[in-house]
Image (cartoon, rainbow, N blue to C red; front, side):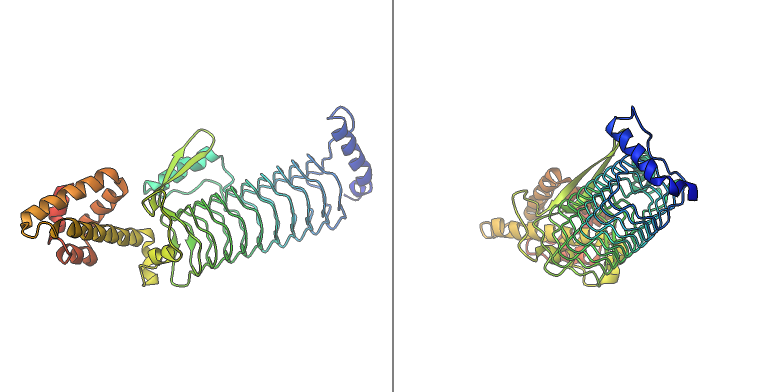
Length: 398
């Protein structure tokens, strides 16, 4: 490799000529498998270069242009990539432990299965970056659909992208794909995660204070002991997310939230849509603190940690039924004080059917609750302000 190092300047000049002539002159820079450890390449133009499998550990690539470069499996441990342009580069399987990428441009970069443990990505731009599993999107979509249907199967030859303890404070991760990534104890304070894909991501003990998660997909994400203080969760989907008593939600900003997730596999990507909005009215907004009250209905953190959104769904149903009973009491009992129990049951039947027809999520919650009635549901049906009714009778309404 000493010979290669001595001709480095010459090869870079040929590469520049290749770029300027659109491939008609010079030669594309190729250092696949080369050892360039600790070399100073700051500010060089390596756009579209091939560096796959090379050893670039502790290399200085600050302010370098590596856009659209091929760096599959490249060793960049401890490398200096501050302010480097890596937009559109292929870094799948790359080793970036302890690397510094402050202010780096990683727009639409491919970082599938990369190792970024303790990497410094402060204020880096990862817009639409792919940090998910290193398999085709349509294959991942089919696997996810099998998981959703209750079949747990392994992803073949796929490792999660590892961002454990990485510093992503202030980073732009909007619309980035982080499905299945490991962000345990990562620092994402002030990061932009708008519309980011975070399916089954490990966010436990991560710092997401002041982060923007508007429209993010947090389906099945694990957020035990995660700090969401002052974060914006408006329009995010939290179906089956897992939180516990140590999850911090102080001063969370949230105008609305989605509790259901629609997933559809298309030829080249996964189409994601959300449903079951809270508040129900699409024009309504949560008042400050309402989201925390909704999630905080369960005081036993261990129960929520174990059952996730199932517990949340039950509490939402209790609220919905309680509201129905209160409205019926207000509308009918004051005007029809002599209404018999059978009359009130008939009115309740019409109201339940109307709600179930116009709100499928309500119907699903009610059916699930009737199949395995909780004490809270039984108490509400037996001790409400309108009429005493059993879960079995409610079932006949549907």
